[in-house]
Amino acid sequence: MPTSVVFVDAFTDTVFRGNPAAVCVLDAPRPAGWMQALAAELNLAATAFSEPRADGFGLRWFSPTAELALCGHGTLASAHVLWETGRLAAEAPARFATASGTLTAERQDGWIVLDLPAEPAVAATAPPGLLESLGVGARWVGRNRLDYVVEVDDETAVTALAPDLRALTAVDTRGVIVTARASTPGVDFVSRFFAPRVGIPEDAVTGSAHCCLAPFWAARLGRTTLTARQLSARTGVLRTALAGDRVRLGGRAVTVLRGELLAAQPSR
Image 1 (spheres, rainbow, N blue to C red):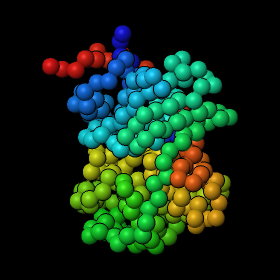
Image 2 (tube, rainbow, N blue to C red):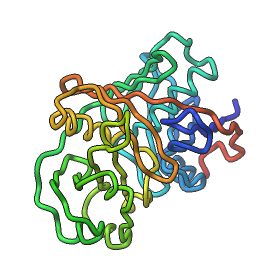
Image 3 (tube, rainbow, N blue to C red):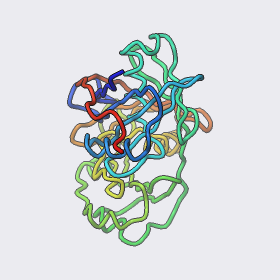
């Protein structure tokens, strides 16, 4: 069978907004080297590879330069493609076995709601070069297993960020989340995300970052259900709901392109 590739804009209902991901639904697992090479060829923030299993689907995500431990927009895009292509019935939940455990997705009122692990941050000392490369002062700095988190004064400071990405690459972390309370009506908090060490200078909309931001802002705002906006050039909107050690992350998705891989077999 031919191997298809579908380009999906995630965390948006408008093409050329949100975060683009490539989705490949495979008939069987492929070597990691081949998946990494294809992700580099497609050169998107994430290429997601899924294959059917007895209890759902296996799922792995790759940036152009590295395999990712957790990728929200690649998971959302994968579920969207499974439903859109009829591999899953419209009312059936998507269930994925991943490096971050079992993740699920379901449709609710025109949105896709992901069930992901919460990734809370704890207060940490900013490592050398972090704040200097961002060019900001920090109200708070924290760290979880994936990223550093930097809270700044306001939404304007998040929008104005112009980090030195080369300097930021020297900081030992997958990525850096910069966040503030929102001033935009209807939005609770805003963020941007930078991950040059894994080939993503600035990510457009980062689901995994919101696994950290959901508990962070729930504690500060006193509410478990919040609306977030990521202030990249493409922008995107997310709904977050904290449920114990899990985060329910809502977004939309739109298909942009469908194609067929001509080099679908691993090279020898």
